[in-house]
Amino acid sequence: MLEITKESIEKATAKARIEKPRVRVIEFRTYAVTNKNGVTYTVKFYKVNGRKFGECDCVATRICYHISSSLPIHLVLSEQMHRQTV
Ligand SMILES: [Zn+2]
Image (cartoon, rainbow, N blue to C red; front, side, top):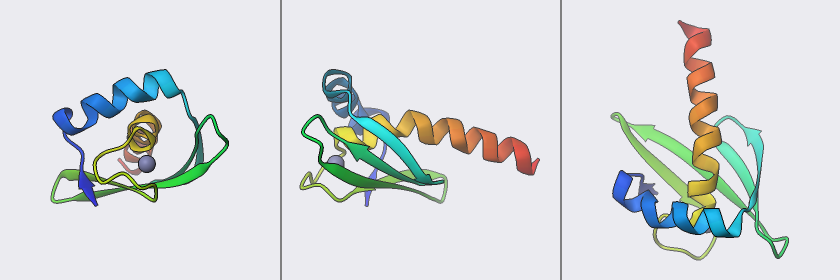
């Protein structure tokens, strides 16, 4: 599990803009990210004590562009879930 911070996500976001992978929602917190070679990785998000964490099953040991490209979708879904429960 890798912590998502402004710093850790920055580089990966730049790469996601170039790579433009396809992101599909499997369920809330779990996303399937397909790169341009057609390889799909599974990304998961967690929240622990108010800190955000991400996990991807690719070989990267840092926040990868699979995580950064699914983050905006995750944030929108989180927002919607939050509104529904209030
Ligand atoms: Zn990845």
